[in-house]
Amino acid sequence: MEQTPNRRKPAPKPNNALGSLLGSVVLGVCIIIAGSTVAGSVKKLTAAVEAQTFASSYASPSNLTVSSTADKKYLTETEAAAYLNMPIEEIKAAITKGEIEQYVKTSSGYTISVDQLDKFFGQKAYDTMTSNNSSASEE
Image: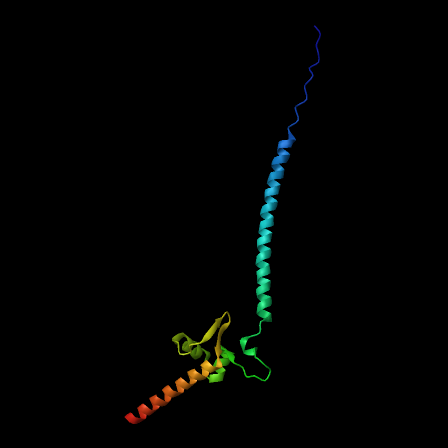
C-alpha cells in the first residue's frame, strides 16, 4: 500500500467584497456626520461674524441726522440721562412706569425722542411746581 501524501487543500479565502462594502458604508456614514457637524459649525460661525460685523459698523441713532446742521432728534438712554441731568436708572424707571411713552427698545438699550424727553421734563417740572405750591400753602 502506497501512501499518498496528504495534500491539504488551501483554505478558502474569505470573501472581501462584503467586508469592503460594509467598510465603505460605515466610512460614508462617518463622512456625512462629520460634514453635517462642520456645516453646522460654519453656520454658527458665519452668524457670529455677521452679528459682530453688524454691531461694529452700526451707527447709533444719536449719530443719525437729516443734515449735518440738524440737531439730534433721538438720544440713547445715556444721552437722555445727560440731557435731563438725571441718573440713567430714573430714565429707565420713567419708561417702565409709562411716563415716557414713546421709545424704541434695542439690543443695547433704549432710544428716545428729544420731543418725548422735553414733554417728560415739562410734566416733571409742573408736578414739582404744584407740589411745592401746595406744601407752601399748607405752612
